[in-house]
Length: 175
Image (tube, rainbow, N blue to C red; front, side, top):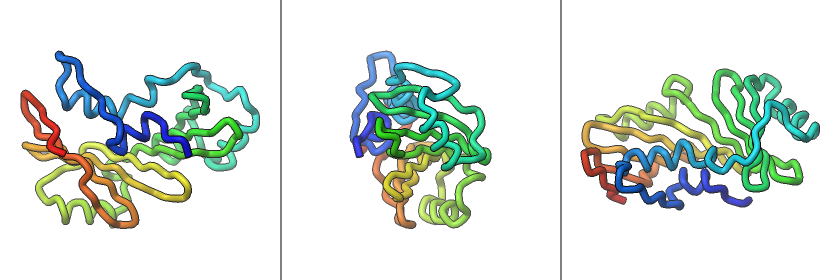
């Protein structure tokens, strides 16, 4: 599977260097939330490929609010399914590369939510994304308190802190 800039940013493998007028916090969240959209070449309401259009509805029969675009020789479709915002990335051969799902705290599985709050008692959830690639489900959860943002990687009920960012006027990345 070819890693896209969005996947690399979410995984913390692509570093975005902020310009002088942009805080590290802004660059950090921008790298996670906006990077994949920055690479869109074309956008349309319908896929040019009837095969991809059919494949989407086989995988997600309840898909609504559908938008197609071309991203680095792959096809990205953005849609909602059962109230969840999703992005699915299809390769040139029509195979599904990965999906990215945005969750609210209320939409997160109860056991996962309980594990987060038991481990990080003084934090609240800022944002939640799930990447599904090759039948592996991985959640990336950004939590915050008055002093820090933390990015958690949750896979197979294991929580790993992969990034910590100190809040303040001069935001600074700690790991």
